[in-house]
Image (cartoon, rainbow, N blue to C red; front, side, top):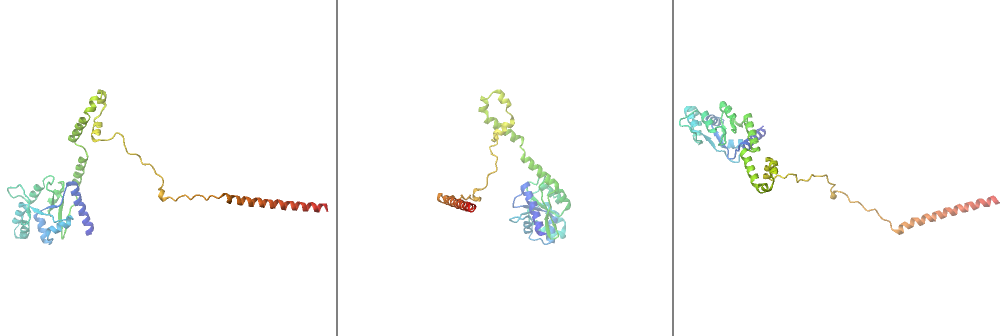
Amino acid sequence: MRVKRRSKHRKVVKFYATCFGFREPYKVLVDGTFVHHLLQNRLLPADDALQALLSASRNPPLFTSKCVVAELRRLGKSHADAFDAASLLATARCEHDKVVNAVDCILSLIGEKNPEHFFVATQDADLRAKLREVPGVPVIYGLKSSLFIEQPSVQQRKFAQLDEEKRLHMGKSEYQKLLNVASEGKTAASENASDDDKNKRSIGSLVENALGVAEKSKFKRKRPKGPNPLSCKKKKPKPQLRASQNQVPKAEGEAKRKRVRKRERSHKNSKQIETVS
């Protein structure tokens, strides 16, 4: 089960790295609930546990905010250890003059597209539900003595697909630049051409010429070839008989025919002698 779980987590990290540009060292933004969970289940040191979860080559830096630390302070003695641990973490700058709720503070740090590429670690179910609607926000949570990464939500996958389609298609500004390059490159040729030829020339042909696209394909169609000559056996030449060898069977045949004719004549003469007597 651990191997399957680790492979799933690697796929999730790879998804965010490919579609949203996450790079090492990964930054993890934690709230008070997650710090309290780490201390209760003794998942320490926390950076080593998160490094194993993200399959990273080095320990990810942990961040919190002043609003999260202030909320832990207000909770009193029950969260004193979590307050001490959170005070040692790096503080992400939030634009709050007055202390606000930890959920609102984290959502303001994430923004609409998570420009800082934070992994958000929290045990708050409501905060996790809100983060699923924000594109490019991987969520980490704990379950007893194990850590998990949520699978990308439907909204995040749709956003990644639309963003990829935008990259594939050419924008209006890029298209206009290509038209300008094509018109500048064909200025000399268009001066010598007639007005009819200028009107017949389409915008698509200008763009193709600017991109250096050939009119006809220069690739030759591959045709089936013969067998590899190295893998074929060589033909053995037929043995040729010498002239002397050819004459020997002919002479033997003539001698045999002479003996047969002589035997037939002797047999005929003996019959004639018997009839006379």
